[in-house]
Amino acid sequence: MRPTSTQLDFAQSGFIGLDGNGVKSVSFEPAFPGAFELFSNGTSGCLDIHPIITGVDAACLLLVTLFLAPAPAVLFSIILILGYLQIVLVSNPPNQPPYWERVLGGLPAVLMAGYFFWRVSFKRSLEAFRHLPVEVAIWQGIGFWIGIESSTIFNKLPIQRLGYGALSATGVVTITVIVIIVAVVVLVQAWQARKFGLLQYYIVR
Image 1 (cartoon, rainbow, N blue to C red):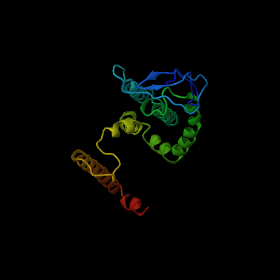
Image 2: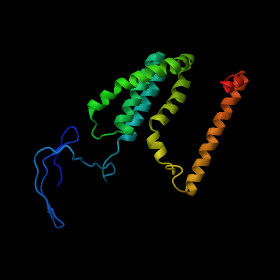
Image 3: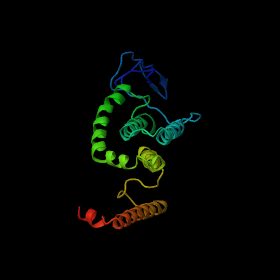
Image 4: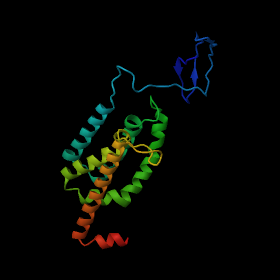
């Protein structure tokens, strides 16, 4: 049987009886809460609007940061809300089409966590770079979109569940490149901290 309509709470109704492959099913009209519907994201001929939406959002965030130069608190609020909506609606949506009550229901928790991160981290960093809008727009934007689209970016890497079987040749190369990049980043940060006399301070702590 197949459902002909979709209801909230994952219930399906209006099952139509079919006769095929030696199996005959009976129609069932009432809603059945245990039923679910399968969607295919790779259907031939369908346009994937994920890259389009992401490109538009990235361009808008870049323009806002560069030309409007919002106050740090406003910029952080834009980043926080945009990031949440980008994940749950575009880059890694748990439901298609989205259940708006769940999307909006998750927003208060995101705002509470965001307020904590603002107080302990972003308030200082964004205030310090307030007069460098180009640097903020570029470097913050790069890090932001890599984090937001991590499920899309890293799914393309030939590494899955380290420790569960041997890596392929491309997986070994990928791991090597990642380790080198991380090592270079750590060394650059350590060198900069040493120039300002802060290396020992951070190592001790």
